[in-house]
Length: 112
Length: 111
Image 1 (spheres, helix red, strand yellow):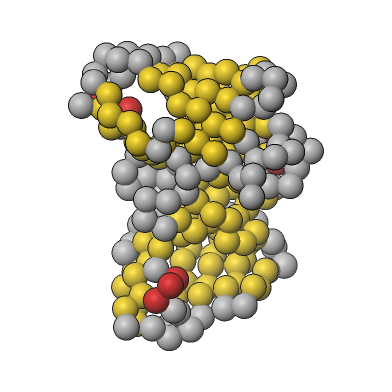
Image 2 (cartoon, chains in turn orange, red; image 1 turned 120 degrees about the horizontal axis):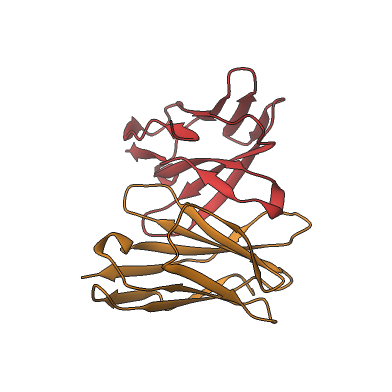
């Protein structure tokens, strides 16, 4: 089943470092959205990529950036990591025409 | 005020009980609403869509009241396997928009 694949599954980084998280969308999906879920909170929208461009962005600082490749896979980059960036980062793929979202199992980032 | 608000719980209920979750939302421009289920340390998974006419799927019933900006989820005959966090979600604009999640309501079903 070609669902959404995220890597790595777990990651520990030090404050001030940079991190790159990766997402491969479900087969046939062309849109990738990223969410941050802190402990005890619901997921919060970071941004969405379609046709290799950022289409929408949530209320996150410029330290959070992304990229989408021609094969629709995507990366989330976070610079100058803060302790508060520790969270589960979820990738969701979809078709721009509709049909719902499929979530990956997430990357759990711990900043120490 | 948060766009989607839920009682965080936890709701601790015995097997077989009926439990209801409520959710309120702001910004009534949203057209689509959902309930997602999230197990501990897992990704959210779509449980069901929510319609003004009501939506029933087995033991689960979801309802949307646009006038009151209120969404509900009713679970009948609770099972141990229903233990999870239930997230109330509004869709800001189909697949070109983004999902706005509530904080979630934690349900624990006890034997």
